[in-house]
Image (cartoon, rainbow, N blue to C red; front, side, top):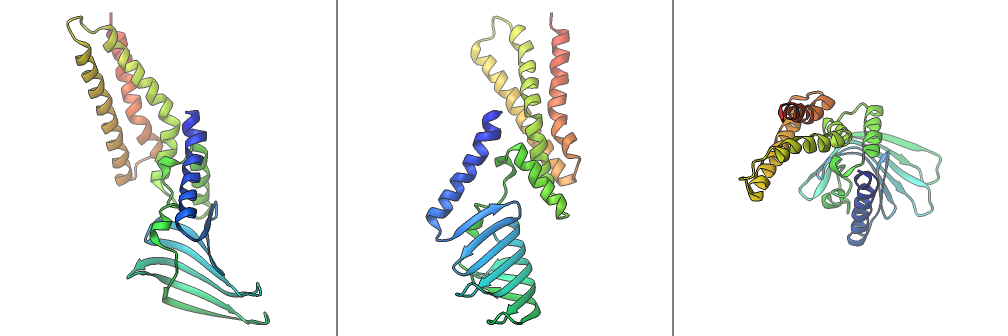
Length: 242
């Protein structure tokens, strides 16, 4: 539990960032306010990454060589099509080189040519299974602040909390089978029984979680139901064992 909470998540992120820095000539970082990417004198802030080719809430800032802002752009959505990004619902503000005026305009759609590639965004796609419970809680709070909701993130969060219960339930379920097994049953048969029970529980747990996503069921109940049922079966088996 300690390793999965405090060691694996930051190590995974560090490895992905190191890989991105080694393979892409771009400066990028990830914060609670989204992904920041620098491409020369252009700074891009992406608040929502649905997948590698679909983005949302994109801010683009262009800076002149003297450090003055020359352009600020916001796009509600962006899709990667035909080798470039298609920005949708765009608000653009162009700044006068002298810094005395700004001109605003709106466009429904515009092509955006950038070295930002979909494969680089794969590094920043939030995979709930790679986040710690603390990171998942922060991400859920960020989504609430921005009127967003992800049932997959909620399931991952509650799954992290319920993992100890799953371990306890499976251990208790194994004890009656070990104590009451007949002597004529070989160790190989015991292993097959144990693997069958464990695999059956894993598949059932995955099936219930996917059904919860499809039908938008309550995340805590969806994640707690399988281990609670296994725990109940284990207690019944204990009660019936001599």
